[in-house]
Length: 382
Ligand SMILES: Cc1ncc(COP(=O)(O)O)c(C=O)c1O
Image (cartoon, rainbow, N blue to C red):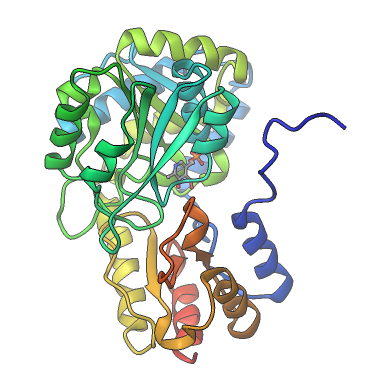
């Protein structure tokens, strides 16, 4: 047997719950992916580019046409200019971008501050680089940064802070004031930022997403990561990008070129064409998902679940304590799947140590209206 580099890692809860949903025939609102397809024109583009012979390695940094589209979109969305050549890198998924940024930054013994509940890829990536995650719980409920806890977590070994807004699983949005506060606290220290903004275009109720790209002081030390998978309803394409100042980008590319070298060529062509021809896809996305959120929440109003409408992402947290306060969230998610035909994700799995009284599961509403209606009917019957 080899000695495991990740001894505490097993099959993730996302795989487990999706498997249980498949076995039991439950509606799968657990893992975060749409049950509908990306735009027809986007899918047609892939076929066209494969037929046209765009099937060999792309540039290591990403197809120039796609990097140009990303830079143009950033300028439209956040009013800031980044260089497509020296600041934008296309990667096979946001996960790979995050992995490479962590490998570029973290030396053995370094500490990385993550905010719990947090996305599951951060900690193993830090461990593989020889670093250690310091988990800072977000305030509960509300999921805002607790600045006292953050200050307590800072140490001379802190090298990196990982932000995620809109936040999976809570949907919470980081504010400009929070970014300012963070910038002030790390100003005199050698600390970098990874800003995981894969849900950047899924922000509701007319609120604007506060991107680290638009925060001059923080951007100077940041890798900002996004995912075409989330924005274009094609999570299986595993295509994302990372934006960082030139010196940071140069270090990230050294890693990226040996992890995967480049992203998938016809997918990059398809995305570049689609972004050029359909820029409105992005401006229409908040309303598209807000309608799904509102439909789902309106239908759940008759259930015994309690919730506050999520301000971002395609996840809705629901409190089930009025139904089965006796069950912890893992047991509840399994019970709901087996007995009531709806699969969810327990929120405690996103924590090093979840609050004892928390009774929350995460439901994904990136689903067709019919799926949401069926799921809500089942949930209202509990
Ligand atoms: C917070 C967060 N970051 C990153 C990712 C991964 O994105 P990708 O599929 O592009 O690797 C996800 C996917 O669920 C996510 O929720």
